[in-house]
Image 1 (cartoon, rainbow, N blue to C red):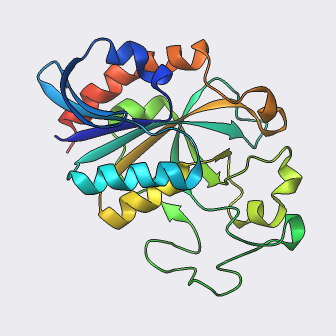
Image 2: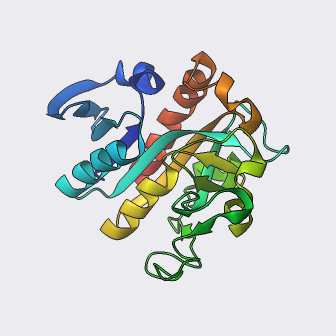
Image 3: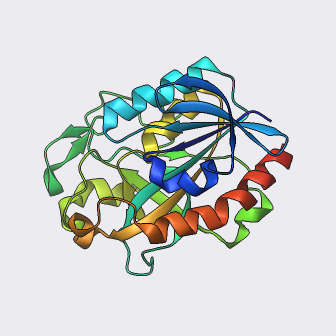
Length: 229
């Protein structure tokens, strides 16, 4: 199985990468490693909307991956969702592509500039229909919204939020999901909840707690993916 692992910053995977044998540099912050008897490609995409979308597209377009595994960062939109946990995003959508703000916001779909059910959208939503391996049974499944700017309160999202009442917000989830849909590549998105949305400005980068949680999970996840078809 040809697997690509994506994360925004090297620190998130530093302990996992330290166990790997470098096989080949594929580009800037993009390389192929040997893990046990399996090759795995790792892309450190960096931050920032269009810039990371470019890195995603370039990598996925270069090789035919059987699976992409993303370790991302998000913020909680609901009180029931605690910080410092890893969640699996099963659907997502773009929350700030349109005109206006708060209750006056209208998406490009509302404005009929794109069809709400234009492939791969279903009523503006991008669903992830990748079959989840058994190893993910203990992870909470959540809905996401993706915005270039993380707001300071839920009220700021207003009309965008009521589209699907998502559980978490990120800056990159829907970008990669859209690309994988268009390229017909299976994707699993595991995102770490950094904070609640109202505290987002206090927590903008991964800390040791996130690194620990990811690295406790990744070997089990990777081994499951290798046997997953």
